[in-house]
Image (cartoon, rainbow, N blue to C red):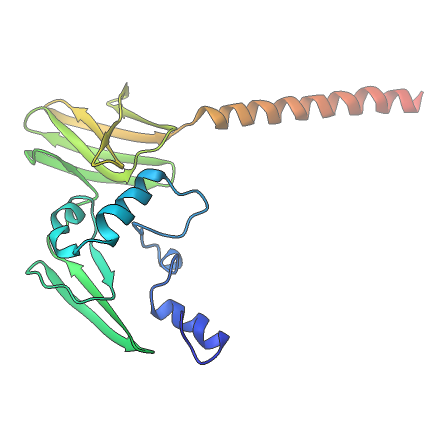
Length: 212
């Protein structure tokens, strides 16, 4: 982050696409600043991408739904469209659009369609039409607590491309639902309910004793 003074530097951090500036604009970021950073994401970013020539990783990036790339070095590829180039304080910034990007959800074999009907923080609903048995890839992080259902029947979520989610789907039309339902939420809700009941009991019992 650069600037003639602190205020200017903070303003320029937006212009320089610093971590998490995307959030107010509802852009999903492959690598933001997080308090809890999964090791798998860290390995992919640092071992596969950060030290590599990104033009040789474009197929991988396309398949995990990376539409825009922001770099400090120029890239040369037919699939990349330069949207912006900026030079400030001796630093270059290049913003590219990836024209070969895959959708956020798709069938791995490509014989059919997958369309997201609903996308929320704790639920994703996808309509699938598969010509034959296939795997549905979703470019969202594989993480404990997520469950998947095909036409209401729970199925196993597989880890795909080291970090993402994938489920098997049979031929035909199906509704695939991913829902975040960790046991820790239920445990927390149970503890909270117990504490509320205990508090109510104590208030009733000891409050009545005080009145007597």
